Amino acid sequence: MHIPDNFIPLWQSAIYWVIALIFIALALRWARNELDDEKVPLIAVLAAGIFAIQAFNLPVGMGTTGHLVGGALAAIVLGSPYAAVFVLTLVLLVQAVVFGDGGITTMGANIINMGVIGGFVGFYSYQGILKYAKNPYLSAGIAAWLACFIPALAASVEMALAGTYPLVEGMIAMGVYHAAIGVIEAVITAGAIYLIASARPELMQSSLGATA
Image (tube, rainbow, N blue to C red; front, side):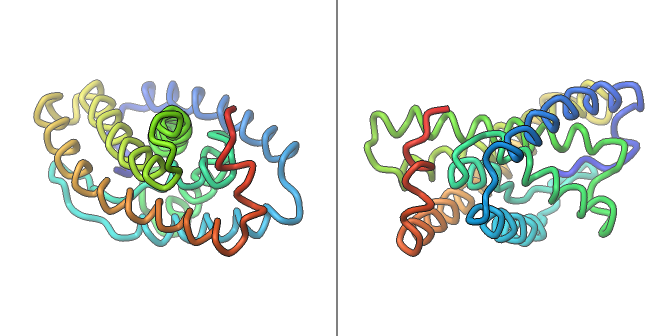
């Protein structure tokens, strides 16, 4: 799902960067207001875990890959979609600058897809599903699947707008792969939240019940 350099024209990449920077600023405000001595180590663990799960890439074709995202996990555990933007921005920055995974010019688009869309879809779909399912782990799993699938479709639309590949073929390729990958992400997310809630329930009390 990491869009490389040259897959999107610079003028389009600039638009995505502007949008991403707005959300990054909001995420930094969240960090200033919400981060404390207990959450900082948790963010470090989440960032390292998300970095690791994103390292397993499957070739989708047409020059891009499919992988787990982790946006829903960060948003649900930390109790805010802006937490996902914060964590994913850190992860994507290290991946692009140090490891060359994903482009620098296209990083704005990647942050929007995985951090913003993944975080907001994951967090708010979790909240909505939880009201009816009454099971935080099932709700987290479904939310994580959506937060993997929908950003993949967004990436395919962006690359279609860029003329990189056709819209329908791109959405089918990205959608099918990430629909399958999303099942793995659902299991990992639900399991991780269960383990964190079991080991440190005080960290998850507000997160599992967050509404904004």
